Image (tube, rainbow, N blue to C red):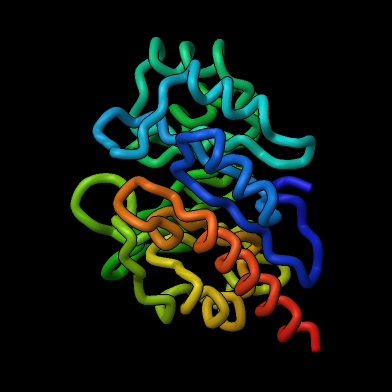
Length: 224
């Protein structure tokens, strides 16, 4: 179905930072909608374009391969595109709207918003109006949310209504809090990385399955 395919009552799930065939197989078995590949060298979850290509070959039709980049150069981006069949780009750095559109070249993309303090949601949505979705993450030092949740209270109602932008909620989600997040915010999708790891950068098959079960339980509760 894909990460951004809207279906009432079914929250999509993206698991980011997968690096092994076992990770892929466990996530797919658990019912994931998208898997994220990190192409940012400073990250402990980084993979090469060639490794990503091998992992993507294990994905069934309908599961998105998301390519996460941070301020990639033209050469870096071209190498990723040439090797790996990415179906959705995630720009997680300081890319301008023009840069995102230039690199995506007509392919689907989403822009990460690093939410903290008085984040200007409406200004951001206008600035990146061509994005297919917005991924909301916590503002921390460096890039990525660091497994830290942000204050959901600051998200305006216009972002969590039926006519809202396609919101992918990230930032410190885990089995214990994702149900509350879905009940309060009704995002199109949720994104998890460190919340399903046994240690930094090491995915846990049980935690991945439990996370997706928690999402489905929240969906069922919302529909009852």
